[in-house]
Length: 319
Ligand SMILES: [Zn+2]
Image (cartoon, rainbow, N blue to C red; front, side, top):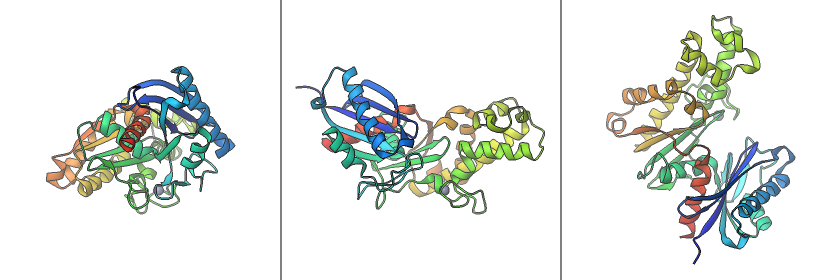
């Protein structure tokens, strides 16, 4: 009898990353396609179907060899109604029944999930949180996403919207967030927020080497690079962002007593300067017994975390 195979799709605003894997998460084939998000849901659905065909071709297998397909995407996915309520990167997806539409296109069972939830499960089962049942996953990139693994399972809350650490209010009078509200963690600690704070400092005439990389070039990586050269403004911008990320994590530790917090995403990858102070902030600010029993780890699966989590979820759902 053949090993059970699953396809998993990480649907992003610019790319679709699709893998074909067995129930243990071993990847047989992978494909990266443009997501065609600007063309709307029909085009994106077609691209996802093409990506599944691509990985099957690469592995020289047929649709009948696949038990089910998992898809994860950024956004508020209503787990009860199986409908995408809203997605920041996917225009026109509000109200789209992701599972139903992809399933009718592929002729296969489809399971959908929020991307941070999927990545959290991937890291908990196969990555930095392996062996732990209480895992918080936080991804810091252009935005801040998070997923909670409680008692070994994804914690979704009432309808699937739990774990929105990025929108935890940490600075009530702080900048306006992409969600329209003020003072969210994402508005002060994400890559976008770091770049914006650096631009503000440059515009105010602060003495910094960041001036040479002004305007469009002033990205979070440029701030990290300047900080590594000892630039005081860059260091101050990063310190501010790390401080508030630390406050968010302190609240998470106090609330959930996780065994491990796994930090992923481009910004976290970029610099040890960003990660190392977080442990100190947690040790100083969280309730001592919880603070002393939590480990802070760098994510291990990178861009594969979401699809790895979807494979685990499919395998565990199908039994
Ligand atoms: Zn927000």
